[in-house]
Length: 160
Ligand code: CUA
Image (cartoon, rainbow, N blue to C red; front, side, top):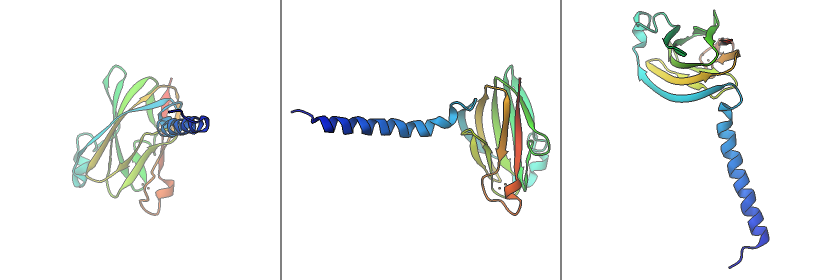
């Protein structure tokens, strides 16, 4: 049996479309200088967050030569760290974010990358990213969280 020339053409076009769709899904990680590696979680008591060994004083901690943990608390309408002071990480570092919320559900998105999670009271969202190139990234809340939702943002500075 022979495949008609037009049928071959349509098969080829269908393949191009499929590859293209996969490309749009994976594109977020490429080209922006930051790669998503991992995504997992845990739990925490939101009522005693202020006494928590990590989330009580959230920030950055070095855990290896080029490796860091960052604890982030989202609350109406700030990220700690990120909003008052930018979060600073060295270029070429691997950073594991641990993100939770103190009051209501928030979002935590590193603008222009696929690093994006919900920040839920009681839950710790955990994901690891690689900061390759120096630059600045916006942090954004992308879950409606109240009257100040639209101004809830922060900044990550990737240093030379
Ligand atoms: Cu926090 Cu929207």
